[in-house]
Image (cartoon, rainbow over the protein chains, first blue to last red):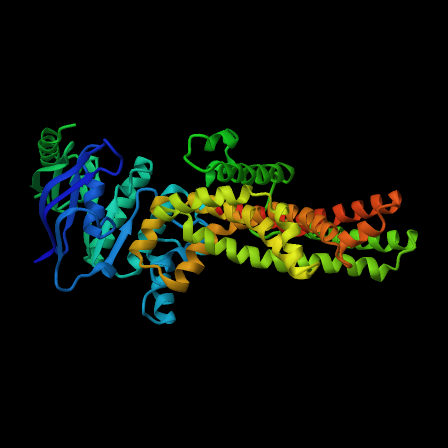
Length: 245
Length: 280
């Protein structure tokens, strides 16, 4: 069942006189319920722009985005590359930020915040401000905030690119555990091939200037994935061949 | 906001930004006022306004000292203590009322006009308006409204509003793009948006603007009270005793202590706290 359908989407940046940049050209894809769909490509391939269009953050584009019958914008969580945490709010308040405008009881809000604090191992930092947290903990908080709204779709814009490789690896494993438990659909942007292969069920390879989908690759590796297996390297080679810088 | 803590940052940081001159100036004050205070109080500092009990006691001393000064000065100058304190209170009340009106208006204008097409039209207009010498209008205003509290407060409002407005705009200009996106994706609206996002974002600019605005406000207050010929307030006090150099000097000293106290006790701790809260 398709959760999001992207049809003939194009995006042109022409805000400045004399400058015209075709960021995306004629993009078509379908996102299936419960899958991890990865947008992979080099800088300038429009993957973050496409993610923002799909999430409803970017409204100015050509083409159409259709959501499945049970999905609307309020079911979307978003994990940002640079965390986008509010520095004046504590960890607890940041998680609650996604809930404050929702028509749910205060008790329910509190229960969800507690659940995410526990799930992301943030309980002892509940009264801490983001600046006092490490990069890994900040992104944990970003993920907790997204999960607190019980999202049907989680959009992730290069969520591990600001982290060191060890922390990123640990967090990817935690994300997979959460995904298997939660079964939310995840749409993630990355420029790292190994990360796309570790996480993605399907990987859309985008090429730059203008941003186009070169190919959507089915990742047939079974989970948990062995990152040093022959099959992994074979798929990695295939993806590298498709990426044109 | 972390760049505000960077030793390499400074007024030149904003030179490349397409901002009105006034706005750049306020960004600099914003940064310098924080920087100076921060150097003085370099170590420790937790989330609260006061660092320790000693800090609180020293601060309280700053409140007691000016009042003692005013009382002793009144006795020495053979002025009824009540009369001097009453004049100080009247002037402070005029400034407080004007400040509250200016703060509300400045905040509303700032959040309404800081971005988009409105900003392109409104900011240059505001930039010109704030440069207008308001004292040029004083004779006309006195002609219409006479030497009244209304005249004084009106002039204080149009003096205090600009530093507040441009400082709040400078805070709003520093909103990160991904904060906006987070607000949008999580559908923050109405009071929740105001409480959790818009108000906290504007606090540093609001405080910086208050420090600058009230400084200018005190100056304008005394001048306006003297020019308009008010029968009460510090302006009237200085007017009455201007022939006595000793009383005038003591009066000016008392006045400076009062302003220093308000800044030290209220604004600077708030400024530090708000900047610390905005650190990312």
